[in-house]
Image 1 (cartoon, rainbow, N blue to C red):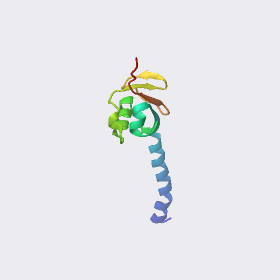
Image 2: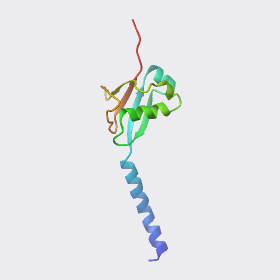
Image 3: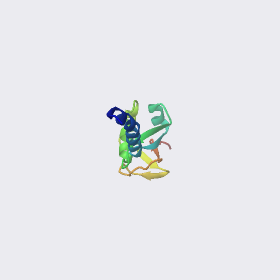
Image 4: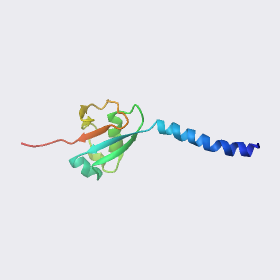
Length: 106
């Protein structure tokens, strides 16, 4: 086998290994947006690609970096999978992060 044949044969395997490795280091978290936050970002939900170990604060920073995200405060009330959480809570793949705007009423 020539060097040319060896490199051609190993390239698909190398690419598969790189893709598999990259896939293991990315997870999806669904951010649910309500009222003024949904209006500001133009959608009621956003799929965020996160890295393992990322926190609620990291997800909020990604939301705030999106167009219209400047209307989301740095530390809004949040819930992860229906439980109120702080910014330092570590997210897991498949989590739902609800970003809850202030509510006024009388």
